[in-house]
Amino acid sequence: MLLYRAAVLAVATLFLVPVSAFASSPRVAALQVDGPLPWFDVARLMADGQLVEAANLLDQLGDLSLAAETRMVALRRLAADGRKAEIAQELPKVLTFYRSVGATRYVREAETLLPSVA
Image 1: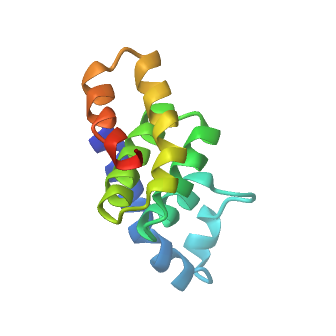
Image 2: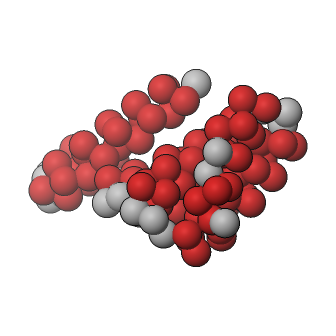
């Protein structure tokens, strides 16, 4: 399921530029939707490397599992950069979600980041 969602987001990201480049086309104009497109916003944030922000938006959209997975990728990057304060802020969110669904493997993986914030 994750691969499917990731593929959808990747394809959406690929079409961000072409759609805007051809927005004057009658065919594209017919495909435009009024109002915000939050999944495109998620794709943009991911493409820009703003993973915590993408995870927050995914939480708002109700895709809690993809939000947790996105947040875990962000946590790994934050740990690699030594950004302890941000890890301390995001890690409880990941642990809470994974514990609530009984995902012990992911809990153990997330717990390996605990020494990073000590």
